[in-house]
Image (cartoon, rainbow, N blue to C red):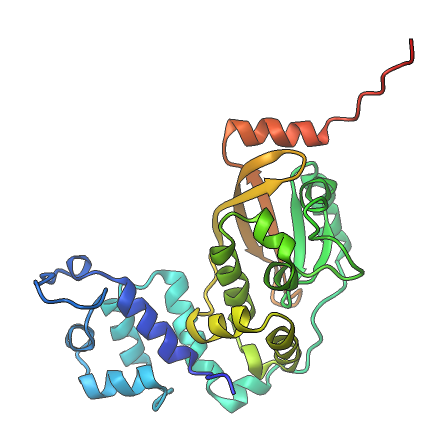
Length: 283
């Protein structure tokens, strides 16, 4: 059984990611592990080391708002990370887990959202539901992602492609990071408390195996909302794309992913993909 101690995992990974100098502490000559010690975070948050240990080990999953605020300050969490921390404590409440847990993953695209995609074209953009199913996309997205194999099948799914299709390892030079981000996106929110995500996770446990289960145990459910994606395209070559992920309204339960060229070479390559083919007349 996969450990569901998401709160403890998040606290531990954030503690290990922050350096002593970021919180005004000396590094010291005998640090054997990166980041802060539990004792240092406990002192900064004014909680006991024993209590912080219980939180990280999952033996206490309901800290008070005051403790959460103190830990968020000690760990220098961003606004998004603070919201994620609060969400993790709510997920541990069975009453919260039942809210909307039987809601089917969205598969219907509102007309105005489809119109938005039309207006975004030729920019590569796609609409995804919480499982990572691709519900709609621009023609530019098809030109970009179709040749690498992402859009194959009746219901293309980004997470399934990245984690189970060998072509993904060729297409994404930073495959390890891309795989981390896909698992983080699945874990964001209730994760296995959502029966539909739980069923998909069970499927990936079988089809992807260790590349999925290892990440479930080690990657916090906090995917990046922006960054740079490197892609090796069979027609356009090496590309660098800035990506932005934007959540639609809660009722939609969907997110829009937009890809923009990150350099002049990628701009020219995308323009080349969009250009109509040249037909030579026989002489």
